[in-house]
Length: 504
Image (cartoon, rainbow, N blue to C red; front, top):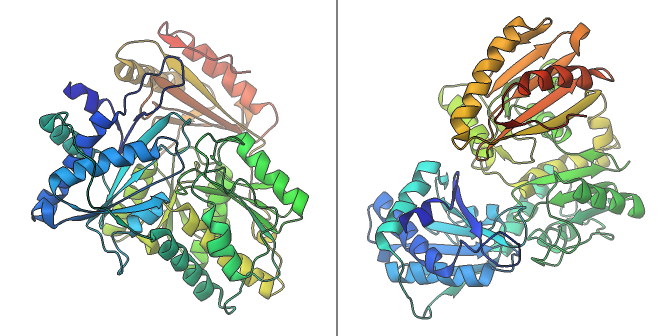
């Protein structure tokens, strides 16, 4: 039975199937399983703080998922068994749930956010926070260990849970940040049309509680009502359908800026007034421009698949230092924190997925705060008659071609098999004309390829959680990806436990 809990660990949070409705996906995140997790978090936190569990105050919030009320009820039953003081924040964003531990008028000892980010409607999960930030992998393992020792228990209806308006306070903090940063009075966004696509997640608050008080015209904003069926598109700035939706809204409404959030608002993307997406490398380029203006020369930490052009932009155009690291938002954030502890100034950590964290904001991956920083710059440019983010991003180098392929590993021990493939790939690269191992690489095998053999780079790595070898290829010339992909296919095809994609 104990394995039931451990199978729910997804890196630094817990995730599972919470609803029936998808063939072949039985429910794994049941109320019986969740109750001991709530209890275990309280016990873990009590031990960490050195106080009895009955002296703790813990807040719980959720995004728009259909299973939210059911899972939340089970969490509260677990917390009540531990004797904690409890608060219900209702519909909330993940960043706001962290802020519940640091806002002076809340100051909870810990908080729990119920979300499965952009995953389908039947999924849900739990993210945990203390005043030190989000929990790490080892913390989750300890909590699940306590849950296994506790075992399944039946709980009666919860007696006492306080209701709190956390999102009002969180939104007010964003408004205050933008007003102070923009320096244009109470309505620094007056005269600007800004549209939001919340994808029926938890980000709809941003229109009425942030943009309108700042004077923005928000006509044309869409999918603001929470609906866990996600009837319009999956709330995910990485998805083409989601970006197409916000591009369409910008173009139809003649907006100066479009904003899109993921389900729980820890990620964001944007669209400029011409309908051009600002996501992935361009989003990092924009945030780097803002941060490096405030903190010249700082280190910008990114994940491993950022483009060569982004590195040039950060280092040659902006005068910063680009530090490519591993994929996984916690990896990127923790690397930035580590650099700061070593005395290397690092104010921004960002993944191409849209996860990003700033030193000034507790290194919290907060999509709404990133947008707040962008809105400050937008307001300043508008007030000074210096254009928009279009001009700010003019000249960002972009590759001629970029593709990602995924080779599925069929071997049962997929981690070990993936390691064997990577070892063999290193030897392959050493013999391949025009190919060389990229120095200062922290994940997988990153290869630089000269102009005669594809003019770009490729990265082969192991997935963080899945039996897959993701393969990224970027080229500075048309047809370059095909050249590189042909050689990669020849290499990968020799492994009988790999399901190699067509790579067309």
